[in-house]
Image (cartoon, rainbow over all chains, first blue to last red; front, side, top):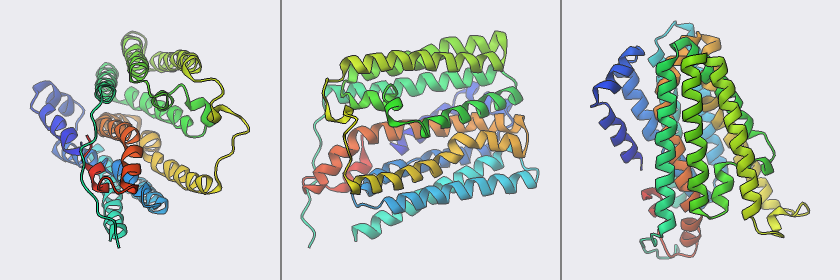
Length: 112
Length: 231
């Protein structure tokens, strides 16, 4: 599912209109790459459903808090350093990727 | 000792295919609406529009469960793929045909008002439809119905998890508008549209298929990792 979503996104970048849209909004390669990363990290939603089968609600909560703290923390740092729009997207990508990796690690640990 | 598990391919019913099509269609229409509004408005105006819409949507996290019934989640519970398809397509298509022209001709304020009006009307229609299709006397509709204590405790943890997990998706645009400026929030909102397509599609499918696979995994009929490969 994550691969399909990323594939659609990548395919859309082959369309000139889409690239023009990104450029017109001042979003460069960093923004596109980190957006793609955040899209793949959306896989954490699927992982959360799997973890419910292990009664691992606390891990799901910890992952959500981790993502929120990293996201808001990133926004604050980016705003303080007068960052580009892409830096705000990086904050989300970092938070969502950390959440996804944490849930994946929890799954493997619980599975044993 | 762990029970032996076998990887099985789940039966692919017509309604499941229709469901996947409906979610994909809704994602596409919703995406088209957001991109067209972004193209119509200036980045600053789009930033304010997206920030306020995100704050309004966050209200769905704190409303009582009964108010969620006319939403797509409520429609999923009716187990009618046709009803879900109709509801979701009408909701997003109406928003597309109302909000985009309003943004173009009347500006972000009226586009936002149009968005709220459309969502309110469709929710009222959804509530009517849900009530008509819901079987009278169903235990879940009984006000005296009490959940098991374990389910309540788990539900609280998941609710807290949803609240924490919704801060950035719903509030991110508003926070950036406050910390930086509205135009930066607009740039960010456009990029996040792509991420939200993935975030919208994944839980919709997982919500539909997850419980079935979890039950089968518990009975040892299917490996839990199968869920990671849906659909």
